[in-house]
Length: 319
Image 1 (spheres, rainbow, N blue to C red):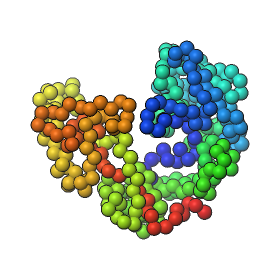
Image 2 (cartoon, rainbow, N blue to C red):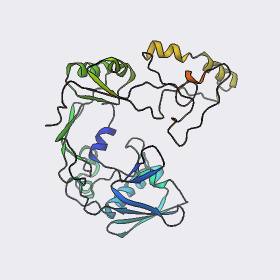
Image 3 (cartoon, one colour):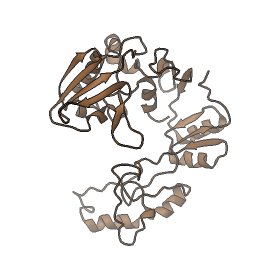
Image 4 (cartoon, rainbow, N blue to C red):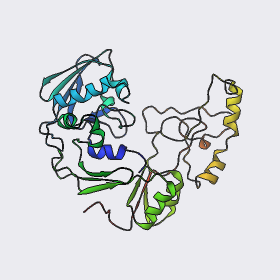
């Protein structure tokens, strides 16, 4: 793995989640989220009986404490969302009211994001916050399907099944083991040898190979991401539109696909994928085919695969 999002999602369930196929947010750990005045006041209802892995109830007080932490921490990726809140209060043990500085129709979405992008939706046990203080990052306690058993930094992290998990019958695995394999060749070699069962969020150079390997199964989701170039309009030479257009025209994405991506490049004509509600088909630049571009602009490209696992043996984590 290359980042902590997968671990965070195993330890912390989100209060809200994005609806499959788009269309905004829907409750997950929360049971409801409604506005009483067209987006300035929001009321979140929580599920009864949800516990953190340490047995602490997930209640309105837990949500308020966690949200206040983001308000008080300017460096938090979620601070920009939290600071839109002017007041919070518990209407009852399972209901939180948020009052915003201005109406925001998409406010529920701020409870759906990843830990790196910033989210108000991953809730930490208040008891763990009190116990570990500034060391909570090394001692995560959430209401997700797994809980921390051991952590050898830069080596491995072992998570075990959360027996207090709120969804009956889940998780189906007894444990997960994460390893930070930052080198592309090491990750792929570990897959080939059977030392690991899955690469999460792997890079194109390993995944194109995995896609053609009959011993591996690849999982692909095009999404709205990709590789891209950014121009600085304020400095020469790209303050000149002609130079920007020249740079775009000079890039042959078909050749790039053949030389660097094993001809697995996925073309796009918009910043967002076609299944996104924000998709708008871009107008082709004269002389350029829309099939030569990738997500985001005429310079963007994305690989065909997003994750891979060995298919020849069952996951070692299911023990």
